[in-house]
Each structure stands twice: as structure tokens, then as C-alpha cells.
Length: 271
Ligand SMILES: Nc1ncnc2c1ncn2[C@@H]1O[C@H](COP(=O)(O)OP(=O)(O)OP(=O)(O)O)[C@@H](O)[C@H]1O
Ligand SMILES: [Mg+2]
Image 1 (cartoon, rainbow, N blue to C red):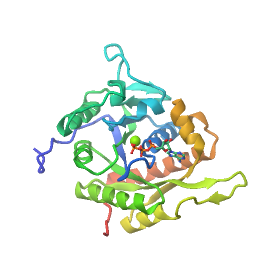
Image 2 (cartoon, protein in one colour):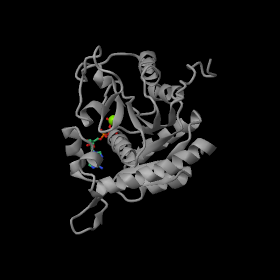
Image 3 (spheres, rainbow, N blue to C red):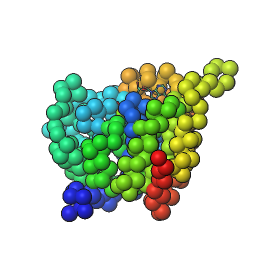
């Protein structure tokens, strides 16, 4: 039994690295980042899985142009755009509220990890639900995580919540691979960067937690359009600026997650 009375970590022998994408605050673009990062890693030649751990508000099916499937006839994970995918949204209509309580949610996620034949994967990306409550804690403790990436936006409110996420990972001794600042700037046609919110928030958070700033992703209305159309931007527009930024992010995540796997660089949280 785990010292905190939690189930032991699942063992995933075929998966090299398990990376959670987290944030303290909702709506900062975790799911979008998880999906596009997964595609970028795939484009670099890795075998990649994307697991949606957001049981109450799954977004992987819609982002990938999928929905509820016939469980009897569909093998899981589902493969699309070269990724291996699993989500509660393949099993239950997202418009029907799932009213499961904590332990059952943890059980569902544990089953996604262990009862599904992921095969051999270089990276399994886990899209976490927003927040730092019990549900997230159980999730990050039951999955054998290499580490977590924390998504924030440049604004102060988002940073306050991102610090909570950092603290949560520190508490459960999960390494933080680094910080991703999403919606950092808008790149105008004239090639000028416009910082619509405040500037440098991701850098500040990275510095104070002594974790790397992995990337700064621009705002692009096409990102949202692609999400609605069911194909991530990096897959649909591989020659766009966003796609290039994600591929660069992918290269850094490969490097930094390898370091985290070796040394377990825990964040230093100064509050
Ligand atoms: N870089 C970006 N440029 C423009 N729109 C973006 C960008 N990143 C994310 N979005 C949009 O912002 C919205 C929220 O993104 P997303 O669902 O990925 O956030 P989330 O953090 O996973 O939310 P939740 O907390 O609800 O899980 C979506 O409509 C998405 O298309
Ligand atoms: Mg999400």
C-alpha cells in the first residue's frame, strides 16, 4: 500500500516516458498543447499516445474529429493522425454528465493506463483536468509519470494557479519538466510580435521554480478553428508558424524529459 493510502503506481513496461500536461487554471490551452505537442513528437518520428484524463470534460475526441464509439467493435486505443488515443469521450456522450465520484474517476484513469494495449510508445502524453484538487492528486500519483509540463498564460491570475500546480507536483515528488507559456503573443502579418497580455510570465514562473521555460506559443485564431474542425493545427497546417513553434517545443521536451527521467529535477517553489 502507498504511504498515503493510495493505490500503487501502475506499471507500464512498453512506455518509455509518461508526460502529464497540467495547469492550475482552466482554459489556458492544456488540451490544445497536449494534442499539438503529441503530433509534433509524432512528426519527429516517435511513437506517441495521448490519454485524456479529463473524465468530466474530455476534449480529445472533439479535437481529433472523433466521438462516442461502439465499445464492442472498436479496439482501443483509437488511432488517428498517427497517435494512439484514449478518452472517456469515446465511451460516454460528453453532453451526458458523468456523475462519478473521486475513487471511480481514479479507477477509470487507472484502467485507461493498464487495461489498454498501448503497445510500444516513446511518449504517452496525459491531458490532465484543470485544477489541483484531489482528483488531480490521485491521477498524478497513480500514473508512473516521468514528469509534468505546466501550461500557463502570461497573465498574473494564471500564474498564481500555475504555482499551485507546481506545489502539487512538488508534494507528490513528480519532476516538473518545464513551463509552457501559451497565448504568449500575436504575430502580425508585418512579422511583429504583439504581447496582448503581460509579457514574461512564463519566464518568471520558470525562473522562480528553477525549471526550464520550454516554449512560448503564439495566439492564432486558426488554433481554435482547427480544434473545432477536429484536426490539430500542427497536423492540418504543418508549415505554419505555430507548427514550427510546436516542433521546436517537441525537441526541447525530448531533451528535458530525458533529463527529468534521470535526475528527477523537482521544482523549487518559493511562495
Ligand atoms: N495558442 C492559441 N491560440 C488561439 N487559441 C487557442 C490557443 N491555445 C488554445 N486556444 C483555444 O483556447 C480554448 C481553450 O483551450 P483548451 O481547451 O486547450 O484549454 P484547457 O486548458 O484544456 O481547458 P480546460 O481547463 O477546460 O481543460 C480553446 O478554444 C482553444 O482552441
Ligand atoms: Mg482541457
